[in-house]
Amino acid sequence: MNDREAKNLKEIMDTEKLNWRSFVYQEAVNSKWNPSTPTYYVIDPQGVIRYKWRGNPGERAMDTAVDKLLEETEGSRKSR
Image (cartoon, rainbow, N blue to C red):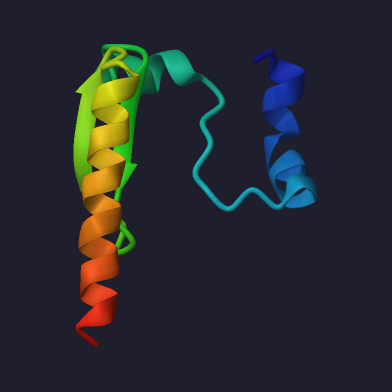
């Protein structure tokens, strides 16, 4: 991202209705918090990270994780 884009980030976020944190200089964030790209997460309905992989885990691993979480979520809905 160049400096012109950095100055317009807030405006872009408002226009596009982006409600998550965005960082202008991603390199600094990546070096501290995400040294391995890509990183994949499966997050449950409460916002808890349930699965995390550094690097591509493969389609089967991601599908299995999502399926398990969906089963848990459906099970908890039925017991209500």
